[in-house]
Image 1 (cartoon, rainbow, N blue to C red):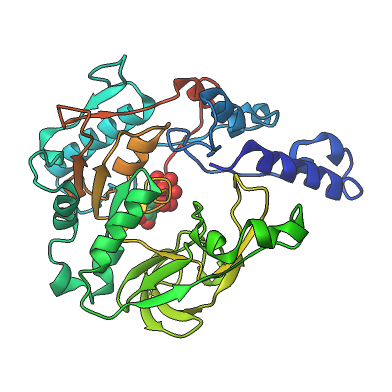
Image 2: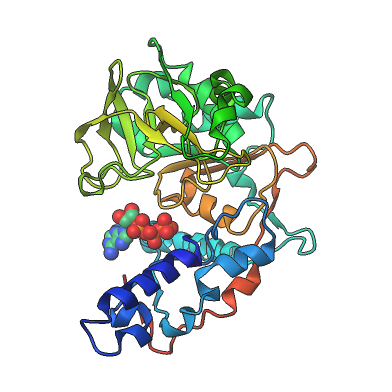
Amino acid sequence: MAHKYCFEALDRSLRDILKDKYEDSINKPFGGLTVVCGGDFRQILPVIPKSTKADIIDASLNSSYLWPSFQVYELTQNMRLFNPNMSSTEAAKIASFDEWLLQIGNGSLYDDKEKELIRLPADLCITSYEDPMKSIIQAIYSTFLQSYSDPTYFKERAILTPTNDMVHELNEMIMDIIPAEARTYLSSDGICKASFKTDQNDLLYPTEFLNNLKFSGVPNHNIQLKVGAPIMLLRNLNQGDGLCNGTRLIVTNLGKWSIRADIISGKNIGTNVTIPRIIMSPNESRWPFKLNRRQLPVTTCFAMTINKSQGQSLKHVGLFLHKQLFTHGQAYVAMSRVTTREGLTIINADDEVEDKTLIKNIVYREIFQTILPSTQSSVQP
Ligand SMILES: Nc1ncnc2c1ncn2[C@@H]1O[C@H](COP(=O)(O)OP(=O)(O)OP(=O)(O)O)[C@@H](O)[C@H]1O
């Protein structure tokens, strides 16, 4: 979810822009324009590094001065799970899975409420394994070598995990299975000239040091790609052509400075596009300078973080928990990515938990308090 400041900035800009055109625009939300927002407060709320629960709730749209001006309309049908050709038995099974997901999202179903633990149905979990990472890879990519050249194979599956470190480990392990040569792309890193103390920066932060820095949402200095590997865009390159942050593609050609890839998600599926290197900077950084990294704006996506999976629909989802979930909505987002219940496999590899069918589900229930749908607001999608 976007920070409430994004909506407030749009509100103030529209009031300002429209004040000469329409009477009293300055006093109306969004200058009097109708603005439609689509979202789900059960999903992950604005990400604020090192924040408290109160900070996150305060950053959400329903803590904004704009919220009382919104009218809430609720969608009633889970279209991701919906299949028009299903039998009544299948429909009943889907309805019960959908209900279970909503209870998880609402925080109304706990096995141990104090410890915020929910019990997973045993058939969704793999509980006996030698190496949990190999087991989740085997579960989701069981026919990898026979199927990896078929783009739909990657389009419909992914492993989800809470942290970027585990995503990188899983991606490296799976990339090694592709029997092709990898090409390495090294970034060109520098400090933005407008940064503080520029005359000392070269001495304090040499290039080798900058190359070692890792930031969420910015590709690493060294990325290795193979033809046939699925990748995800990390920036909006051309929204009109469907090249948005989160779009998934399959690499078809590895050039010296750019790559070519086929789009496999969102708009323009099947289109072959060129992805150039671009300059990226992290949004949040603990360093007293702004890093400029010129690199391909992509990351391999056999595995992705739960946050990054928001918006995706997948037939096969492997939820890999090497440690417990840590923020609002992660369990709901991860488990609601599937298009069928059978497509969900979960491994709880947290050593501190004995019963591997128990996982943490954090829900900030305070966030739902101000969401009151108006009486006639339920709509069919
Ligand atoms: N009216 C509809 N008819 C058929 N399929 C639909 C309809 N609406 C959505 N879908 C399908 O349901 C899936 C989810 O849709 P979409 O991504 O728009 O929902 P969403 O609310 O943004 O999901 P989320 O926020 O959980 O990611 C997609 O596969 C989409 O094609």
